[in-house]
Each structure stands twice: as structure tokens, then as C-alpha cells.
Length: 420
Image (cartoon, rainbow, N blue to C red; front, side, top):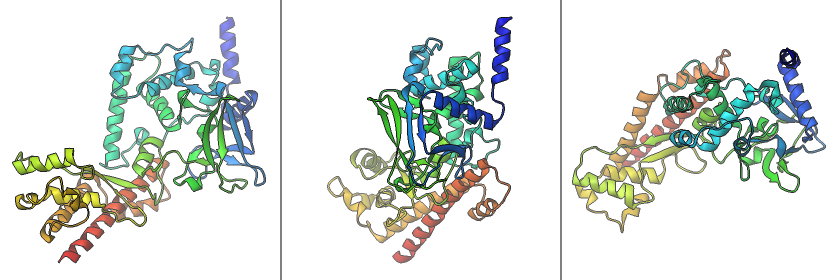
């Protein structure tokens, strides 16, 4: 009877609205000596969900979080209430998910199941309940692109991991939720491994370092606090406080792992896989050997990027294509000593035309196989005021992919016309 009464009281004290949950979380931060001066948590202007905002134009934000609040894979291993998978499960699962991510994903699910008894309950109950990553899309908005197949592969991999664990207390959808929380919000810390950091995980991403108002300084070992420092960027009251998550993230990476995409992303790219002729002729074997073993500059996987002051078609890509389309006679002119000449000069006009037409063929195949709509159709749809985040960010990704291909085709056609 006593246990029932305690459970009823805990249920009564649970916050029921988003505002109540946020108040509870803020109180929890204050109770545990988190320093967050000149900072507030509000609905994000840039993206969905909540974000960090500056509350002063005169004083800089200060964010310092005691390590006692960090939910880490190392802490999970030493928990007295959580039983991690066996080493056999870890070994079988490692082809799908790294050990740190898996253990923290399961620990987060364990703590969520504890409800108000969990130390991290105030943090867990302000975490997103769903995401705009393709894993959570109700419809296929990304057409037949690489993101679609990567998402399907990811879902299948996580399903296999779930089957290995054989859970009694959560579903595959629960597992995908926790996995996405860790994958999109986790920090990699030297002494803690993969870690969820309450408050810090509200900081959104910007593409350029100069746009970031915050940067991670890691854990100060003297104070045992995780520190987010301000950058040199001028900060005004009401500005969203953002981090630069990683180096150069293309929209396919942002959408797949974080659930958003950036219009006119300067680091956007499209992946190309150049397939070799399956015929096992002597000449083809020579080309494969040169490509796969003997040159650092020639390879089969490439990215088309739009970078300032650089052509959209790189010299490495052109050199690879020049080698692939070579005739037997052309191939006889090249060996290890002069192979690097392919990077700086054409073999001959005929070879260059074949190389450019080969690339044009690859790009047209991508358009035909991966896209079910045109660039114009995507741009028109993007003007709709009825888009949810899933479709809107997917359209930004698709538009970027299609624009890169259109720009590349335009570049190739110009190059072909100059060869005539």
C-alpha cells in the first residue's frame, strides 16, 4: 500500500506541459550548481525544439556543468542498477554500432524506464520525443537518394541489434529514439567517452566557425565542470547560442544524423561512385591496379562539392575518368613514373571528350535513378506553406543535390564545347 501511495504521489508531481517540464529542468540545473549566467532556454528560431539564447548584450554567457550531471558510457558501466549486455552481444553488435553508443543508448532507456526515480528525470523529460531525421519520417521525402538507402540500412542494423539484445522493456522504436538522442546530442569526451551533457545539448549547429558563439573547452579537471566558452563573435541579447558541431558537414550528413539541412550549405556535396567495366581484360586489370593500389590521387569514390574559387569537377575526378576511358593505345603511354600527368593535362581531345561524356552519363543516371521529381518541382514545392519539418529539411537536401548536378552538367557541357 505504501508503494502504491508513493507511486501516486510521484505521478501527481510529474510535470504535464512543456512549460512545466522546462521549469522543472531549470530548477534541477540550479539545484545541482550548474552555472548558466546570461543564458535562457527558449524555442529555437533556427530549428525546431528548444535552444540556448543570450539574455544580455553587456555580459557574456557563462555555462559550466558539474561532471556529476553528465550521463556517460563510463558511468553506465559502473551503475549499480543497470545491467549492460554481455561481451558476446557487444561483439556481434559491433558491426552495426560502436560499444560506447550502444551502452549509453541502453542506459538512457533504463533511466527513462525509472521515471521520477531517475536522477536524470528532469533532463530526460525535456528531450525531444521525435525527430526530423529520416529514421522517423512517416513518408519517404528523400526519394531514392543515398540518404534513403542509408536510412534503410541504419534501421535494419538497429533492428538486428535489438534482436540480439532481445529486450523485454522497450520496442525497436524506443531503441531508435534513444540511439538518435545519443547520435545527435552526444559529446565525445576523453575521460568520459560518449556523453550526454544536460543544457549543453541544447546548443544548435552553425556551418562556419565565425558564426558560432560557443565552443567546447571540455572538462576542467580542477573544477570538475564541463565548460562551454564564448567565442569572439559579438553576442546580443536574444541571440541564439550555437556551436559548430564538426568540420565540414554536407546536407546529407546533417539530415541523416541531426534531422535538418541548411539552405545554400557551402559544404554541401553529392557522392559519386564510378563503376569499372566488369570485363576482366588485361587492360582493365591494369587500370584497376593503377587506381586501387598505385596512386593516391586516383580513386573510384568522389564527392562533387561547390567550393569558392574551385571548379565543381576536381582534377582528381577528371584524372580518374581519363584513366578509366583510356583505349589500349592510350594506356601504353602511361606507367608509374608519369601517371601524375593525368592530374594536370589531358591525354588527347578524344580521351577528354570520352571522360567528360562518361561523367555526364553518371550524373544523368543519378538523376534518373535517385530523383522522382525535377529541380523545378522541388523548388515549387518548397514555396508551400504547408510543409512540416520532415518535408522542409528533406526538400532543402534534395534541392541542394539537384543543383549540384545541374551545375556540374553545365560545367561539363561548357568544357565539351571548348574542345570542339
